[in-house]
Image (cartoon, rainbow, N blue to C red):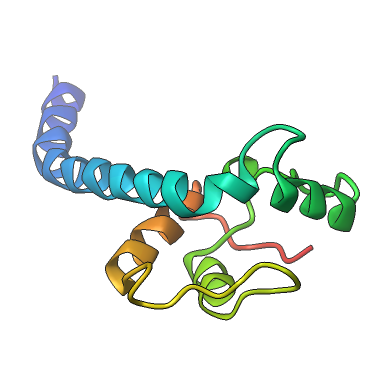
Length: 117
C-alpha cells in the first residue's frame, strides 16, 4: 500500500518533467534529421557514418544515434567547430536552443559519464 502511494506520488511529480523531456527529445530528433542525418544516418550510404566507422574500427558505432558516449558538450563542440571535412554550423543555422536539444537527444544516457574513444 505504501509502495503504491509512493509510486503514484512519484508519477505525479515526474509526469511534467517527462512531458518536457519528450518535447525536447522531439526537437532534438528533428534537428538531427534535418542537419545530421544526411551524413550520420544509419547504413553504409552516409559519409559521416563511414568515416566514424573507419576512425574507431568498431570500438563505437558509426551512426551517431547508436552511440552511448556522446555528451551534450561534445556534440556542441563538433557542431560549432567542425572536424576534418565536417563543416561547422553557425547559430543562424542551428540555434543554441536547438543545439542543446540535439545534444540531449544524442546523449541517450544522462547518468553515464562519457568515455572518449
